[in-house]
Image (cartoon, rainbow, N blue to C red; front, side, top):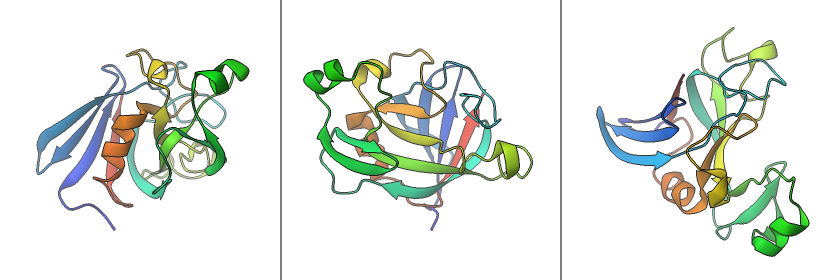
Length: 163
């Protein structure tokens, strides 16, 4: 079900996500997109461009900073001690908005399929959202920001990612 009159706009150059309602930006969030830049190919480590939809919302009811692996909570809560024990881990925290491409041949199907690339908008430790591209393809948000966003969208909400 699509959220009426709402869509999300992610600007890769600005490292910012806007919530657009009835044509007006009503909220802004800092994000971090891929350190490899924009791109749609599988295994590229790039953030896909174009129109997407939220195909699944994952994590409702879990505590802030819940750690996810394979879209499932691990039972861990992110903190500095856990981070120190796992310095190379790519943290997926708090909530996940799993994206699906809407443009066949560009970001949907075969080697460019956003959904099968497991591209998400997800929570991250705050230092993972520094205004610089540094993700592995996903769109990272601060945990408190993804909590706020998660409750304002539904599956089917459209997302435009601009390079």
